[in-house]
Amino acid sequence: MEKFAREINGQFSQYDQMKSVLIVPLWKGRFQTVVGVVKELEQFGRNAISLSSRICPLSPEINMEELLRKNSSLCYARFAIEDQTLKVQATALMDQITEAVLKEIIMEVAATADKWEYQLTGKDVN
Image 1 (cartoon, rainbow, N blue to C red):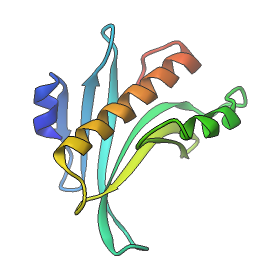
Image 2: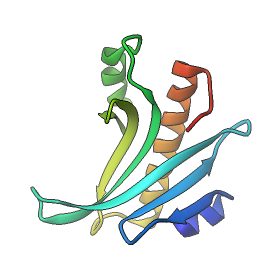
Image 3: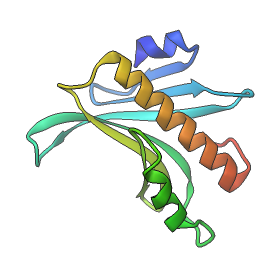
Image 4: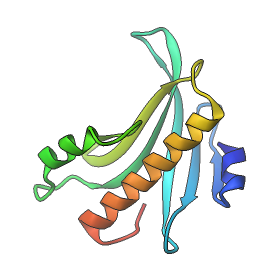
């Protein structure tokens, strides 16, 4: 992720061996934060990287059915809810992911979260 941050003129911060943050520059001066967390998927007995980006706090105005339907149009990412927050998330097994695919996943997560953040809030907060 650090190398990719340099390639796209983004910012990278590593919190520890398991968690890092990438600020991804997008269109028209907008940015989106993508958090990467390495974790063990117990059901598979393998390590995976989870990449996620916040959209906004949950609210009754959000059309969840629409978001579930939009999941089918995404390649790697999906909409998810965590701690009363709507997010875009993707997970990949560490032993199968390539650098090129990791870059694609990061960009899809960032661009999707940014698009829906703007659509739902009209702001660039995350």
